Length: 323
Ligand code: GLU
Image 1 (tube, helix red, strand yellow):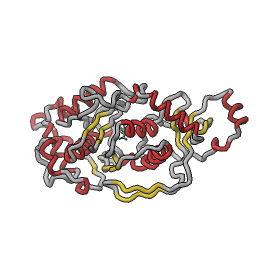
Image 2 (image 1 turned 120 degrees about the vertical axis):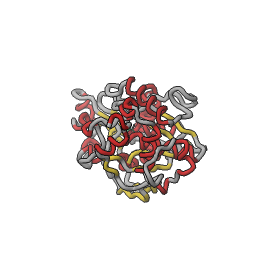
Image 3 (image 1 turned 90 degrees about the horizontal axis):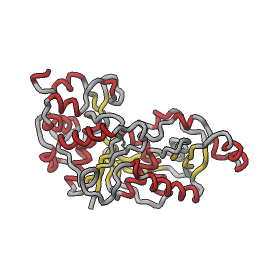
Image 4 (image 1 turned 90 degrees about the vertical axis):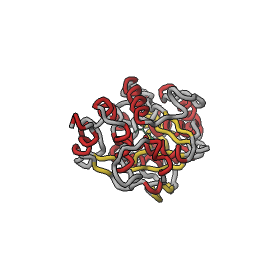
């Protein structure tokens, strides 16, 4: 049985870009008669807000995207909140440590990284880590540990990473690309890379469909799967929606939240139809229910082009009375 998931981070409201990913990953599972899981990625508990989780859940329901496992549904792989799954992460770190795959890192840059949030392209992290702390002697580590708590880094092997992405096609990442990465921050916070890998494996996810800002995180996750002897899912990365400045959609691009459209009186069918149209699943933007698209879904059909969202397009999604 195929299993897919939608894994939002509740630090910001769901926007049209997230809704596109939710729709495509939902369609992929519904078309395959698989299981769809909703997992709340609130590992960075400081930045996550329960009221945002509530709104994401309400938005998904409004869009007609249901889930078989997760909050309010079957709980065969509970808990579905990452903040409640830290024992699993702790245990995996102990194994990786025992196998010599981790080392303490005392570089201050480590603290600056938003490692718990999903990175939006590895380039957003700055230059790859130099590996400076990898070769510290035990004595040097002990000395440094007296004045500073280290973060933990995963040390990459010598292998290149090759995989075929279901949307983006064949991928090749040279050995060491991205550099050794943080799996636990100095303050104890587990990284996105670690948590997402362990959760997808524990929840028996066979198909990950997500935004292509995470394409270059996939080699890191594949290294973790290999190091832990876990079977990786098939990956498919769909193009993100961009703002008019060509940058990843974010708050600076104005109010395009799903909850705002919902409150403004937009019909969910209008949003679904428009998302299906820009994804390449239908020829014209027309009102359609998510359920009606299930028979039309093919991964090959998903448009590879990034899509620029304009203010005018958002206005067209609003009901006539508010335009
Ligand atoms: N939680 C991540 C996000 O909201 C997605 C993680 C994933 O799909 O791997 O950006």
